[in-house]
Amino acid sequence: MHYSVNYIQDHPLPTYAELDEMILSTKILASNLIEALGIPKGFKEDSYEYAYNMAKTEKTAYNTEVQLQCHFWQGTSNGPSRELFIGKERKSSIISVNHKRRTHYSSAFAPIMRVAELEMLRDEFFDISPEKASADHGVLKLKGKIASQCSNYWVRNGISLISDHTSEPSVKTTAKEAGYRNIRDKETFVWSRISTYRASTTISLNQHYMTEVDSRKLCVVNCNGKTGFPLNAKPMPLPKKCDPSYELYASKVLVVYPKKVESSDSEAEAISGFSFEDRYICIGETNGGERIVSCSTTPGRAVGGVNVKTKNKVLDTLDFSF
Image (cartoon, rainbow, N blue to C red):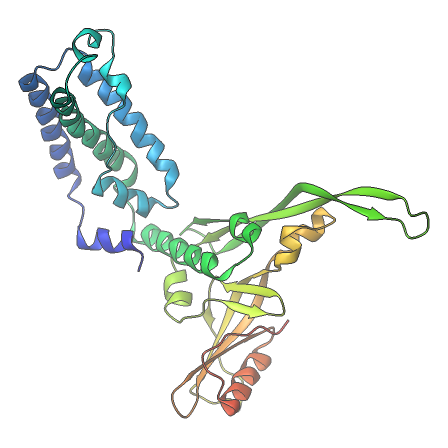
């Protein structure tokens, strides 16, 4: 389980009313510190504007709402900029302050920053449904699998993951010019330049990824230079005369052909580097209890793959038949 999901489970958020009360008490703390430390007028307003802009910037560093929820609940370690020490009304008293005085300003800034974080949490990331959180969790899981299983830089960075608990998984692929290569005509021996294309794709996952794919360990497929990632897995009846202990699933799989994704001579060829295809996954066990998984284009081939692997005692692998 991703650390952010663990954190939210171990540190439940307060109610909305309790969160509002925390924001108010933190504002009062900031005001009291500013008054007690004798910090010049204007620092509080400038600090809040600066802190709120920093909190908004933090939103771009994370992939999912559940990560942002965790991030703003944990709090950041951001400190004040030197710009806050040289405002029009504060310049004369701050430009030559000693280290202790600067520490006072940092102490006053900390609760102001916390107010901005808690307001961001309250207004945008507080009320996340269990379905939305589960879909976000699936995105984090798949992101980790892609990062560990795709050695090709352009494939890893060409995949964007989003969560959408309101619809079925989907894949949308585009391509654009990414350079050129020189070719030589075999008859005239004249060199010419042709454009090359690189693909990128956006994958949408729903909340069922965790239960259908991750919990069943139907994660990564490698075969003949291609890599596949199942995005869902629906149980289906076993064929006749099949071992009743087997499990059979219909699955939508993202199939990746790295060579086409990285560089192709046409936009259409580059787009074909990512495809969203129907597959069938069968799970079984050997007599010794080893888990066997097979993935293919038909239910019969998927079951046959488990039969062959069981006979040969091939351990927990997931193979495609293209």
